Amino acid sequence: MSIHTTEVVLPGLVEPDGLQVRERTIDEPGQGQALVRVEATGVSFAEKGMRRGRYPGQPAFPFVPGYDLVGTVAAVGPGVDEALVGRRFAALTKTGGWSTYVVLAAADLVDVPAGLDPAEAESMIVNGVTAWQMLHRDAKVGAGDTVLVHGANGGVGTVLVQLARLAGATVVGTAAPRHHEQLRAMGVQPVDYRDPALADRLAELAPAGFDAVFDHLGGDSFRRSFAMLAPGGTLVCYGTAAGLEDSGSVVWLFVRMLVPILLRDALPNGHHATFYNLWGGSWRRAAFRTRLHTDLTGVFALLSDGALTAHVAARLPLTEAGTALALAESRTVLGKVVLLP
Image (cartoon, rainbow, N blue to C red; front, side, top):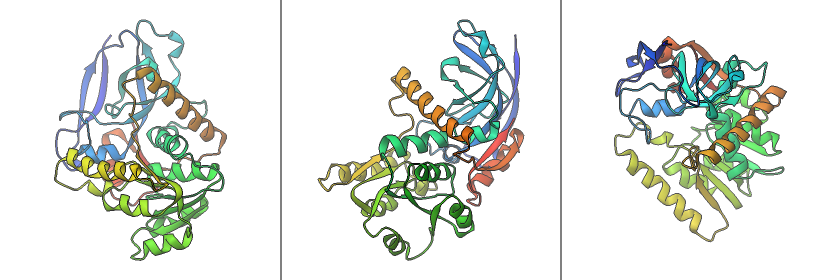
């Protein structure tokens, strides 16, 4: 059996309109694998970095981007339960998701509850797991805490602020003014990230400091965020958005970022600093899968129950991936841009 798929290719260092659409034939699923018909896949921070060649560990060009997806199993290979066929699942892929069909390890599939919109479920995969693990596994935020979320309007940010509110925390979020009304509706105190007096404004909102700060920017922002912590507070760093346009070595960028974090964490000052890595421990495949399944299932349960709201910024056809990537990079949207194959 041969399967024809349409996929979007990142050919090299290109602008979003340089993405290419191609047709090809893929092999049928092998031992332990499942063929998935993709219903929704997303545009994440990773693709913004990958097209610039600035995402650590990305494949050599050309390759098919696509960090995560939701789809229905169309066929299974030997050793896989036939009952999976026709059921909807989510998967974390890192690359390859921008396609109409993909072949994946069946063990990597996570059930999507019946009734969930595929695009809404898709917006909660990498963003939801990242937010959940940073909040509950790293910072251990609880009732009565005060937290700061940089980029509260982003894909991760919109999930993070909701989870923090569900945990009973007071949430302050930085974002452009055009997103402030929506953030207030989520119970967030918004602050303009471009305010020249931003540090003073944040100090007014949390005079004793923040119990947790979530920072995706990198560079000097990490230093400023660490200084805002309350005694016993935790800084969780999870990105290098501020260095996206740099032309230097990606490895050196991470060295310059990680060393100050590790040094600050080692100091006996009552503060904690860490860099969150979604793929941390992935070499222990079984444990990684168990953790991913547990956490994503928890996020999906909250979404299914209505406790979480998915913020899908836009839905575009797969063949308009270039437009979708440009929109995601424009900093004008709230939530995640989703592609519909």
